[in-house]
Length: 226
Image (cartoon, rainbow, N blue to C red):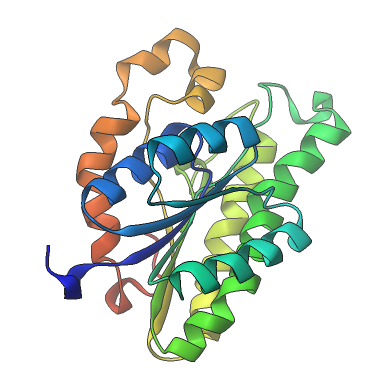
């Protein structure tokens, strides 16, 4: 990869699952990555493993924390070329009326408010730079539904609408889209499918094809579900 191909990537939810796999793949390809996760212990371990990455413990549901992270990222590596809102929670499998109030609130706070907080913090710099791509991770359950995961479905349907409307707000040169990564064997999938989750591809295998795909997204996909 030559210098002109190097990208600055901002990635939330790097401590497990798809986020951890993407972090490894982006770095192996020579890109610069700023990543965050809620667990300080896991972030510290990743920082030792990947000393060249800008990694920080940040709860995306806390806008003050996201704002402080933004200041550090812009100072350290500049404006992101590719912003990936990957961090998410899923509720315990339960009918909607049995979901605890606090659990419902936590899913909303991370999956919707967290995306808004990151977009609000970083988009002005991307607009000033005149370029960038914002990819908000959705789900098959942002385009369909299933029993026992109504809170999660609600947030991913919200991400579909938020992303399409955001694309209409953005000036030329900046693109935004909702992205369905497919069904991957992660802890989140295990919480829904149990042992059956093991029949699906693991995150590392998924990242081999999907990280190059994410890097290819741009104006042609603006406002479209991908």
